[in-house]
Image 1 (spheres, rainbow, N blue to C red):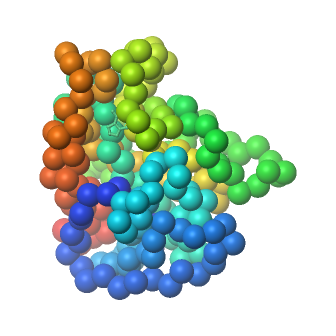
Image 2: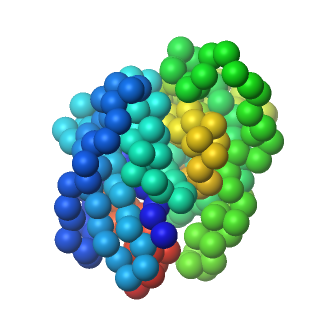
Image 3: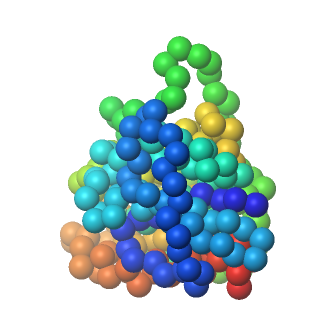
Length: 236
Ligand code: HPA
């Protein structure tokens, strides 16, 4: 099996040795960086940092089409996006992992389709249920279920925007979940998102969001993504 994994900016260390996969097809422009390939027992794992090697690409400026196309060109059977998020549901604790089951897209102006002419794409259930369940089963502390609200960024939200998202039914908020998920659907690649909660969303606790804590948890929590993905790859 081959899986593609998009990761954020925090350094992550996989237990297998990395090699650089070839960049095969640039018809949608440059992907964020070259893909690193890790070989596990029964899985080839292709990892790309969606913000680029120097974390230089903001969420709204990522070439999601080139990134997904690169994974497709490598022949992946599934794609997993790892995403740091703010929690909107007050029951969700900072530091926890959540695999959402649905999403609402609040982004604008992103190149979000491979085809301006073709067809409607079914997207009622944006995440692949089987893939989500397989991931959630690997760790009893991972919560399966939640609605990911994808905002434009790069700024964080106002308290009023978060109140609106809560009212809409969002339990998590992030900036990079779309159009990653819908482009994967266009390419008919099963997609799942694993979210690490790094802060309570704006307005949920008194005062401003603690940005130093957000960065700290994004860094220390990143290895949780690796552990889950390596388990999925049969490495642990
Ligand atoms: N909002 C949007 N994106 C985020 C947040 C947030 O509160 N935390 C981490 N990514």
